[in-house]
Length: 255
Image (tube, rainbow, N blue to C red; front, side, top):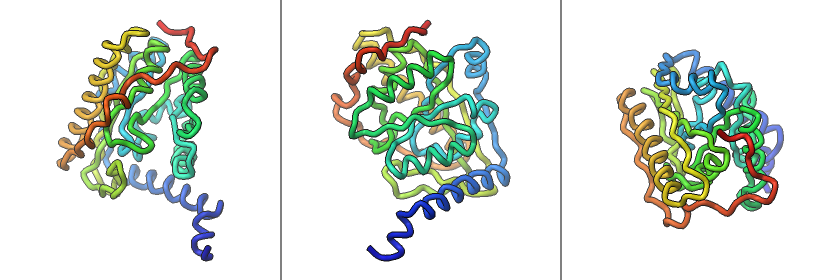
């Protein structure tokens, strides 16, 4: 391994990359106009003391620290335990978020239990349901299963920028550029399906996916940029509810 390869895998390079991400996001925000809309329904849930899941596509993570900046220290995000995922989650941590790590190789029962515990405490949890590997802008069933178990609503959110670069990653990640107009939109809450109702599960899954994409497209239109199309849908089996988590992971604080 060359010295440059060793450097970029080192903790020093990791820390530098994290700081660059944090300060770049702050610089974009400080040099841009940030327009926020649609937060009234979100705030009504908060005022009622009702926890909820926040749903956003993976390619629209960058400016999320400012989507609800008054509450960042009360929010938790689901993040990949992979090195790249830790880089993002630790960067978001600098804005006050906490993170639940997910290792796709070990299954999801541990993170599911933790998310249910946080919801029971009245906290909100943000999930990118197409991450960490895609398909882009396609919603798998895990988030809907958690919403059904906890009986909490799902609130979509999206943003876009008038000046941006789309990276060549699987999700066409949006890199906002400084001196932009940023548009962030919150959608209306979507009620969870009843526990154990497979037909209702699929209806809600399709509704959430459609609302998330429509919201993202509207952000793009308001910014005068082309919407990002979803990838081809995955096999239907990938959208079905996963197996229930291990015993003891039930949620007892639902409404």
